[in-house]
Every structure is written in C-alpha cells, then in structure tokens.
Length: 199
Ligand code: GAR
Image (cartoon, rainbow, N blue to C red; front, side, top):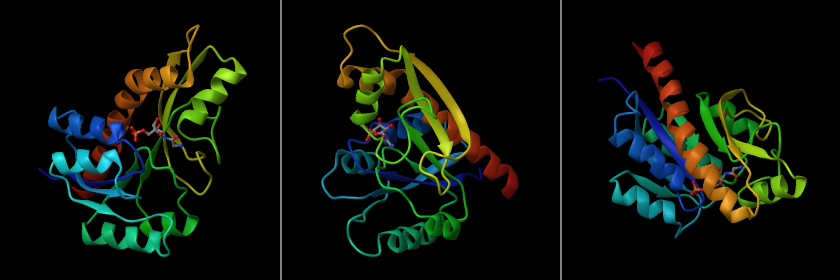
C-alpha cells in the first residue's frame, strides 16, 4: 500500500516518537510509515527507541553549522513526504520550511495560543501554566510555519490541572492523556491526505 514517508525530529526522551511507533504497530498510523528519525544531539533516549524499532536514525547536531542543510539532504535521500517534530526543541527557519515544501507537524504541551511561542518548551510550559493558575491545560498539534507555534492547529486535547500538581506531575498527565493520543492521530490525518494526493 502507498504510504507517506515520515521523518521524526527529536531532542529528548522520545516518548512522543514512541507513541508514533506504537500507533504504527497497532495500525492506527497506517497511511504513513516512519522512515527516519533525526536526533539533534547524541546520546538522547529517542535514539535508543528508534534503534529498537529498527528505524533509520541520524544524529545531526543542531548547534553545529549546516544543521538545516544536513537535515534537508537526509530528508531528500530518504524520500520524506512529511516531518513530525516530536519533542524537537529547535526552531526551524522560514528558509528550511520553504525548501522542504511539505507538511511539518509539531506537538506543543499546552493549549495554543496559551503558553506557547519562543522560550516555551518542555517543563517550562507546565511551570508557566501552574504559575498562572489555569485549571485546564492540554496539548496541541499544529502545522509548522515561520511563526514559532503559530501554524494552523490540527488537533487539541484538554487536560485538567489538579490540586498539588508539580510541573513534572502535570507534564506526565498531559503526555499520557493528550500528547501520545493526538500526535499519532494528527500524523495519520496528514499522511492520509498525502496518500490521497499521490494516488
Ligand atoms: C513533550 O512534552 C513535547 O510536547 C515537548 O517536549 C516534550 C518532549 O518529550 N515539546 C515542546 O515543548 C516543544 N515546544 P519526549 O522527548 O518524551 O517526546
């Protein structure tokens, strides 16, 4: 069956990459196949997850010159149709987005437009939500454009903030109840659209 070839960009533990891999095994992600993982630094947990799943994995260090050119050429070599930022903590340039010219999805651990944009990533997002005192937070999957966290929203899921939450506890709940659910769903939606266009 024709599938969209997916590249996943990662910077950390890779639990969102794992959610995509698991969804692929369960055939919930069926219009897309994960063809490549790109880790932006060495030694991160996401690399071990990709290797265990038998996915091609490249480490391309974000802080070294030519990062985006190297990622683009890896995408071209692997015939990538769409990319997913799954806990990728860099910001891709407008030039990169234009040159790739295909859909790029991002998962953000809050309900955009709250607690998003430059400087909001990882645990800091949950710390900001707790400091503000919101009673509901969640996760958002959106298309990537030149504005950090500013592209069209594809899916969102709300999660309750509970008394006694720490950033760590809230992060875990948002991951389990929202991120790992909506990221594979959004990847399937976009992959299915790509397959329809290819047919
Ligand atoms: C996830 O919570 C993801 O939403 C967040 O980083 C974490 C990565 O975890 N991403 C951002 O904050 C992007 N702005 P993971 O490596 O286990 O998937």
